[in-house]
Length: 91
Image 1 (tube, rainbow, N blue to C red):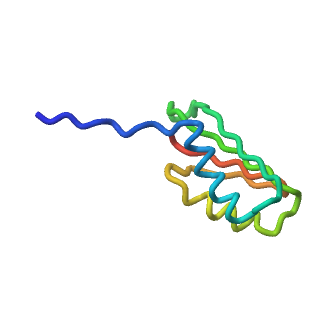
Image 2: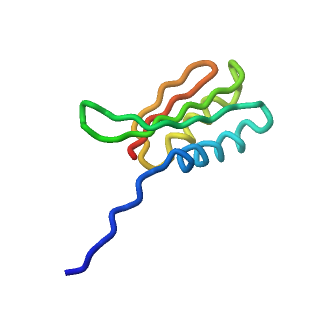
């Protein structure tokens, strides 16, 4: 019987770096911040990663950024505001 490795779990630095790539490409030089943290979905009993991107209010690229962030692996949902986007991903 062959043993297969379980896929590596998403880490905080990986999640932040993946989102930061999109932010830097779409909003260069605006002083946007990207922060990630671990959490847990109690309804499905699964670990999740929450990443919050903040940027200047009403930035023109915010909708394009949200679409791009939705392409990240494990994407589950997002909440957008006029100065931030919060995405939830499976870990």
